[in-house]
Amino acid sequence: DPYPFIVVQRVGSDPNVSLQGASNLQNTRLSIEIHARTILEADALKRSVEAAMAEWTVTNVPLSSLDIFEEAVGVHRIVMDYSIWSIY
Image (cartoon, rainbow, N blue to C red):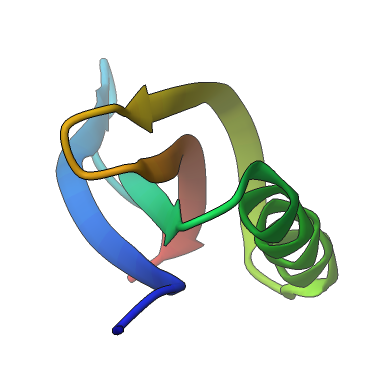
């Protein structure tokens, strides 16, 4: 049984451009999916992800969180989206 597990995916990255031209500030959207057999296990992992993101030295903003139960396979899934700001 491979559960629980977490999938992290870069969803998109938009360049920041102003009237003065291109900026070296980058905004990337990150999706973090938690897969677990029980809601308690999924929620514990969610709290761990939230704590890790809060401690990360890169500026990030939580955008959304969605709880889903995949009835066909009996898996709880939590999808968390973050906006990540960095200088490249």
